[in-house]
Length: 350
Image 1 (cartoon, helix red, strand yellow):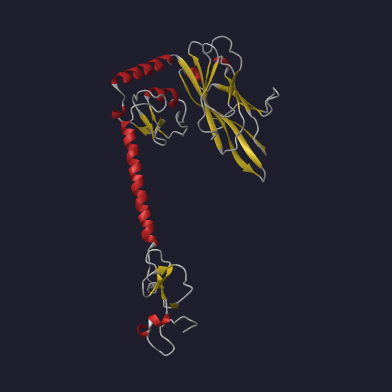
Image 2 (cartoon, helix red, strand yellow):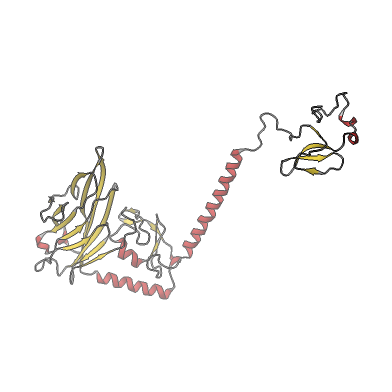
């Protein structure tokens, strides 16, 4: 016995076995046990079975191995692989359920995500899954390669936006008829209209340890409405000092359809682009107020529109300014009077 406690073999100094110990003579005697639920060590009265969590001050404590049976060497209590596979299966089922719910919403959708009107000739864009009616496709996707709802870049193949649509998505017949009439009106308004689609922006790449090489660019994406508009630009002026009338650089010959100006600086800077059209077109210069961006590439589009009757007639109007800082898409309509229409930018300068 160690002090007033019995050794782990539960015998007295005379060598008596545990089952021969006279518990009554020892007074209150406790044994150490492990609670099956909590796993905590407790003390149990060997006579009454009463348990307490604190070591009793009086009586004797039988010392015995109270630890639960240990697993054999090399035995695995649980498998992390089984646990991770279970989590993976749960995630797979959850993702499948969410995907099916999204497909159900798409199949039952009957209104355009952009104008909230009936989905006539619907197109669901491949990347963002926004659904557009024929009117919104005609208004926006003809010229711009971003979703008018969320700003996501539109995937294009063969010159056409990539997406899908089903006849089941058509709205009620009455609402569809209204949208079809709206589409015919839009198409009628464009009869005799000439369009020059310009793309402007900048690229940026590191140059040295602390500077960046910025390239400001402008190009003609396409022209519509008249053969006179082929090669419509005479020159593009770039000015990094807008307070001075004299441009920093003038580009008269595009390289790979791009009019460009490159300048290296430690920070972004303003670079105003002024587009001069051929004199015989009688179109006013379009000044794009722009500042180079730190992103690898930023591009937006401007549609310059006039009519076939007005093209090449009379003296051109004065210079028209387009607010391109921050970069945005928009229209410059020259008939009946010059008007600038800037579209909301949903990409945050990307």
